[in-house]
Length: 436
Ligand code: UD1
Image (cartoon, rainbow, N blue to C red):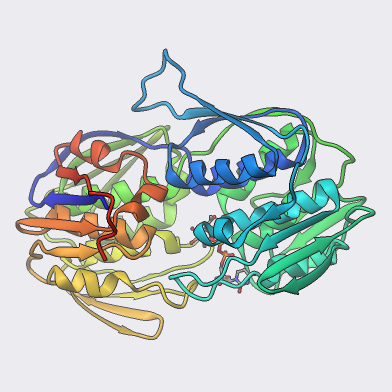
């Protein structure tokens, strides 16, 4: 398996173009199941997760074509993906497929909405907590689907179609909000989603669905109203910029020191992070299409407290990376995780680099140390693994991050983007054998 080796201590200077958002792209791809006409997605990130979902959709009947615009700069331009599902040839998503990527469970709603039935595996356990799908299933039931669970599979049936309903989520779930939206667009009548997630990726999905002919209003607020339509058509849509990738490189620049401009992005999408970075002593200057991060590596950052929350709060997907920054800050920082119960798996790995972190329940106390030292570390999940890269940028000597397939799921050309700004980082190709 591939590894990433980083020699710490280099300042960063330059520009990093931000790619399209993984978490938006994979929901937009699922929307292609709702129409027999082509859905053309531009600014698509080149990621293991999107390729994987493309393979799953192909089995369901979608013709997936990826292309690069030959005149565009591969560094800044995303891919174009065309998805055409003339006919659903199978309503079955196996355990092997869904287990590998939890978000593939979101094909269930569109399949039921379009064909009246589907059999999709439950996603199973996940390394960042139990992550059940009860809210997804309750939403589909509220829309009139009959749900049966057998041997790890969800059988959903709505032979006469889905029917609009009022659905109030007991707590905020990004996945359940998107799933309900993907199903309700083809339901008869009006659906109102209350206590909906407000993540920008949901507004992006609603915008694309509306281009396809759906009638969705209020996406991006806690109440989303969907007037069902009987059919949807094709559309062309550019995937929103990845705010988690933007936040990650902002933190990488802050950790290494120097001056880095992040482009092709929307700075307001990381407001909660920017506020905390400024409080810690990092320079954050907004531009129309991104931010410039400045930090004098000789000046020590201050420890600050963060609590993860649904959007517009501090993103749980940036918690591990922020903690990496705090390992070298002056004083003691408190990091509270409120979204996922087991999202501190990066802590022992940061500890191998010399960080001083104590976890009690959902809180981590980070006592800033004077220096980190490079070591061999293990990536445990997508965001945790990139926090180790960030720590490695400031650690003395060489840090090797093993099992980087986690990184490849969500970060496009990470080592190229960082080395273009002066980071000493390289990929060591594996021999194909698992390294655990
Ligand atoms: C999405 C993002 C993920 C991000 C998370 C929170 C994608 C592909 N992934 O994940 O990167 O970290 O939002 O911002 O978009 N829950 C239930 N029952 C359910 C659904 C969720 O109990 O039916 C719980 C989860 O276990 C978790 C919390 O609700 O504790 C929030 O999860 P949710 O917002 O649904 O996250 P995902 O959509 O899985």
